[in-house]
Image: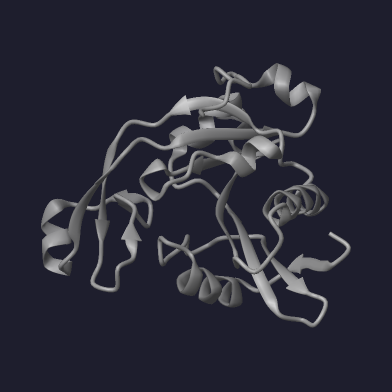
Length: 201
């Protein structure tokens, strides 16, 4: 990454970039830490957000209930198309290293690749994530701005009545590919997920 600069970025700036460039048009309200990718001329080219997973089941699924706080989610990643082809994987790898410096208690990072958006997790495969299957298909909601809304908002399930009141439209999405990055051998040994390196093609 010698031709780029990677550093933490304020949530507000990261959120603005995500809304403008990510297909979901939105992000977690409390994402932290967030990282930016800049050119040597200080042009912001990409953003990566980490966040606490919305689902308690996801947090518990890696090591169990007692170590759920050791799990974080790679929540959003977007890089402008003007960058070289290997930039995304290099950026993710750099952010994973920087995360461990900032949050030494983190032992695992989960992430999801959405086939409904044409993704299967090639970047995570290149970064040596483990694969552990797909989630079930689920109904998400699209608001008036085109933003895709998770069925859980602010820690609770959104009722159908509430979505009608807000004018959100139901959108059925295929199950996502699930990945986990484990920082060391002990984390791999303690992981209770059915992890594999047999990646989806």
